Amino acid sequence: MASPQAGVSPQPAEGSASLENFGYRQELRRELRFIDMLAYGLVFMVPIAPFAIFGAVFQVSGGMVALTYLVALVAMLFTANSYAQMVKAFPMAGSVYNYASRGIAPPVGFVAGWAILLDYILVPSLLYVVAAFSMNAIVTAIPTAVWLVAFVVVNTVVNYLGIKITATVTRWFLIAQLVVLALVVVVFLIALGQGKGNGLSAGTALFNGDLFGWSLIFAAVGVAMLSFLGFDGISMLAEENREEASKIGRAMAGALIVAGVLFVLQTWLGSMLVPNPDGLLNGGPVAGDEFAAAAETASGHWMYVLTSLATALAWGIANAMVAQGATSRLLFAMARDKQLPSFLARVSPKHAVPTNAVFLVAGLSLVLGLTLWFTREADAIADLGRLVNFGALIAFIVLHLTVFWWYVVRNGSRDWLRHAVLPAVGLAMLVYVVVNQKIFAQLIGGIWVLLGIAVVAFLVATKRTPMLSGMSEETTVDPDDNLTPAP
Image (cartoon, rainbow, N blue to C red; front, side, top):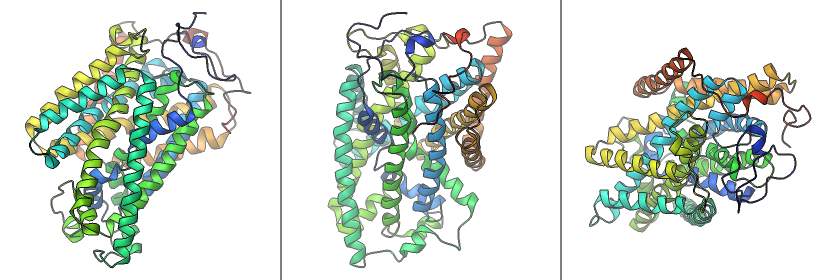
């Protein structure tokens, strides 16, 4: 067994599988506890994420934004259960890529990793460009491109310095977001108490029987899902977790529930204050500042500035920082298995981070972000968001299939609830969301997935089938360990 690198923290608590058991050397530094991972997931999702896409979700959902977020939360909780089951079996970086590779077969894992790359590679660019445009609207003297470059540089430096620094910075940003959100909720409640609403009642803002339809709500879920993406990024930290593997699943579920409740609350109140709701419902233009406009209605222009600034910094620094870190771990995991160029698997001995992967993500984010800024096409930014969601949804669907195949088919589990029923329900909900996505996302996302299938088919045909380290030694899981549901 290879010895851990000098300076690496101890292995996780007894009961968690050692990384060396899967044929890997411990290179990343185990410094994270449950609270660190919970904070990481919350920052990745951004507690104030609906601020930025509130108008779009309001329009697509027929004004039922809070209901949309509630349905999305339920769908994601089913996905969190599947993550929790698979991280117990395979507690390592790589997320769905690793789970599907080892739980079903390496070619399936490659396609899953390829699909989620569409999410992980594009999401930092999306975050950077939206934040840069927002900051330019607040401080017009500084060009959008300068803001974009500044965000990329700051986040790259923090990620390069190590996971502990990243966790510390993100925790402070989380506290700041929660303070802003608490202030917004109080101001909104006071405003509604003073009769400043737009005419929508509390009941209608949650459920409008005249407009309700499941296809309508699930089409809106396809947009709102962007706010939830990030809880799965916690699984990318499995090799930096110093506690038992079950804590990763708990952190994902905890982050989802906390964020989901906050999303529902803020959008429910915002729906009753947003100016000109009929204009949005009748297909009027979505400017992207609808939540800030609701805040301005509640308490004046200072609230508009506060919510706009909070959105820009949360997306451009906090969210993009953890997105860049999670993406670099996915590239690292796939490169370590020789399914991406090997230079991406290089780890800094000093900082214990995959530095080349971090720099590559920064470079791609900069190029894609500047391209979006140059085109200045609002539709291009919206379509990029839909593509991000599409890649994640396909990977989540593969995840649910993996739980059933690994536990029930390969290892004979009779825990029908966690290993069959819950994954099946989660899979059905996600398939329905994909079906109700915009044609653009279905077309481009489908082409991306088919390209991944073609690549793996070529590798198999040329006798270079993807294979992960240590797989030849894997047989079945211990029924007293990995088949035992997490408490």
